[in-house]
Length: 367
Image 1: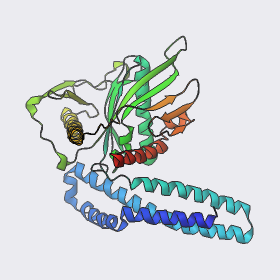
Image 2: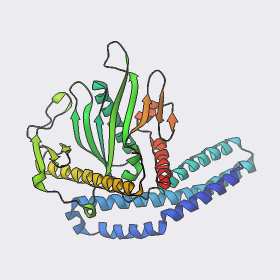
Image 3: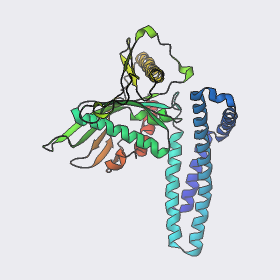
Image 4: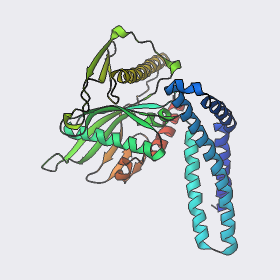
């Protein structure tokens, strides 16, 4: 396709995306948030103040990105004209690279418009648990934790590790951490499910191939409006000493907190703060999120039963990571595949996430 036609096509897509995002409404909200952030009283509630500033930063970033892409589309058109006028292949190659980058970025914006679920805008709590595979599974769970934290770091998203339970030999039994940016839940919820790793085990002295599994759970951070009443009499609260790899004590006081919700069996833990009260407060927030997710699942199951639908859960094996005898990462639902697992495990998972979001929207339309 002629570059001029490509630019027109991308400009039309950008206009459509801009209309769906409603930049005017975003700018109105930005003005309101700026007014809130200028109020000295805002910081009397640290959690709310951080939510306001993060939301403002997210909106400013989105508006600047959309406006910047529009300007770059105009500029790349001028660059092609310059290349044509001067018959300069280097300038044309530069314009081709910029046009391809713009195509990619506009595609990412288009995916963002699909995040319109009731909780998609929320921050996310990600939990990872080692499953079948022994010490390899524990090591695999830690590799996944690093993958998601690196993904967040690449995008500049703040994270907070709430709890990590280390395995005895290597790796971790479980971990929970927050991704503190708007739309984190909508972006990551397709990662929920079982992740399978095939490799030569570094823990096997006979160098045999090992298959191991880890489960990933993603729930939205509970907002105050989503509050669920929890009966304190239904909780078992245990305190213990925070520990690091190999069982090494992190501090000398019993500040870590584990809360068990007796009716459901849901267990949450937090050990990232030295204060037992702070750890308990964070653990209660995690429990709220998990109870809310459970409530939504029960409500959805009831609706499915009424409709007579047989809707399969997304929480099944969803991605295979093969490091031996060949190199591959493949999503079993979307078909998305790459031959570069090293990059994926270093946090380059945007292609998988985008394809998941499109796949989930298609599933929801069919349902």
